[in-house]
Figure 1 (cartoon, rainbow, N blue to C red):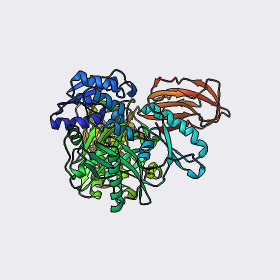
Figure 2: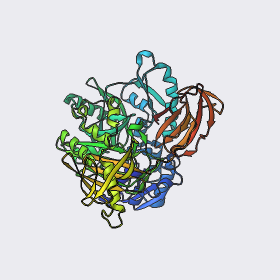
Figure 3: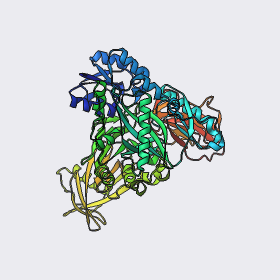
Figure 4: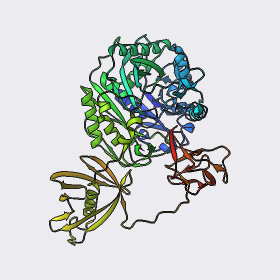
Length: 633
């Protein structure tokens, strides 16, 4: 029996596994990098071991350090989580060689499916040979890893070599393996997967289906189970292929077999030899704890001959610290509050006051709703997210709510191109127009010496705010009367430092106001509006030379263009600097053709948002605004 277990991962993943361990009476061990010294998964573990450094390659990807940490902490088992080392056969062998229990499939099964090219061969699928124009569009894909890194859609044959080179570099950086391959790209398919569980006694469970079609840059955003609107014979085929993948590899434990469904057919993509981030929707529908099953299978227990029957519907949304309206740019800062109301499961690796940094994935949490029907589950999750208090960096919360309510999604007519078609409208910022007034009234009450409205001057009071993330500036004017504060067109029914009640066009509206050092969050029936207080007199802005290339976010300079130097000629759109932050790579491109007059970016250097990276002097002195292209790493 396992008595102490180390999780070879961080954040939400480790917290999720620890929760099951506590229920089973198993002691927990965390590992952490210097950047994660006070992270939630460290605080929740019974024991924690430091891995010196900050980058994944120096810490969480160092299997040798993880095994030593388990031995030092007296753990007798290692769970790899569902990222980083979970699909590394060499790591699995090192765990077993150290005499520890490995909570995962046999190393041989991991090797069989670790390379997507070899996995397709095992499933009888021939690889795409030499690519011609007739094959377009195609998808360049990393043979190892996932999460959209090392992946490029190619629609122009002349760009194939460049995209292959970029994909190889990204794959090598993310997974330590630069192998890539090319496969046909299906424009309007649905991403459907099957969860499997297999024991050492010959039993394999295909656990329904999951639809993961709502993706941006090949990273999943919303997932659900069961996948809606699939014909029974197609579901049977998906289950059969998934079971075959498990049996040809003598699989053990939890795994996920992924498909692209198009024209009523299931096209095998890959097998992930681990749990997936979206596994909670399967747990909800089947009433199972998949992590507990992993542990019991590793201890030699047999699964029942048949899994429990599936019931109802579950949907999961991934809450990211990112700005969809700014090309999905990841965000950093302090997470002051994360509270999702109602009967919704929230898996997170962050607590109030934690810092969202640049070193790791931008996902804050995943919210999961379960209901008897799909329509009820979608409504339940959308309503909970809309009422959620997410105070801190800009997030994709509003986009999630709109996605869950989009008619194409609610009618189950979505495919993997959903965000290509709808992202601009779904990501548009729509702050509550009365939020600045509520913030100003609450601030005035909070600053009153006696906690009330003592100043009865007839002169209007002025406050300025900027709504985030759209940057719109607002001037708020109100005045005090003997009956209380008043504002043109709005009746102020009551106002305290944290609660403001307004009457707008005969409708009573209530706002909760929460202030932090640099931000005010106003929450009402239309959701949450983030505001930045501004000085009454605008501050002078720093002058920048035309053609200045600024860092769009804090991150690390990973490289500069080969052979580039000050004084070199550049062309419009030419990539000059590559910046990496939160597992995303951002290309900083020349805004116009001209001369590179300054280059401050140095590979390996960390930069803050707004840092000057380079300056391009346009040949005609009429350069367009800064051109920045963000791409998934």
